[in-house]
Length: 156
Image (cartoon, rainbow, N blue to C red):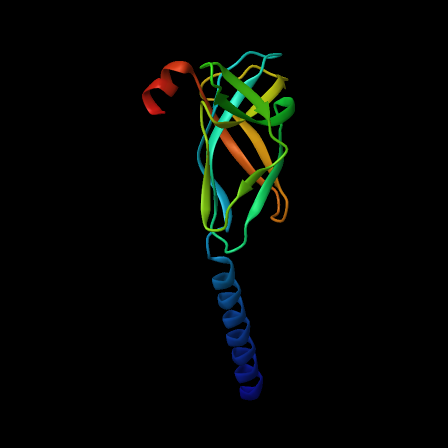
């Protein structure tokens, strides 16, 4: 009986140490992620934009190759730029390079996600699900808060 108890304790200790080491392996932060994300409020059938900071903490560069959202028909990656005549133009981007150990800002007047053909109204306080697709990294799904114009002026 004593041998059985000692064996069971030994097996339990081995299992606990395996669990602890497994947790430690997954405790490090994601290599690719996002922060400070938000979307503009808009009515069903219209378009909106999502802004964020996208980071890559790995030693290997990657590329953002697309996005999708639960509240829209499609999502495109755009870049707004001022031309030589001080006219703002917006061009669709097939990819956005994400440098190793770097960060890319998606903000008004620069890179942003155009969320096209909203399938529902987006009011301040709502959320949408935005999934980012990468060349090498697994998809990243974000729960993005919706803000109205007054909130955007105060916070961004």
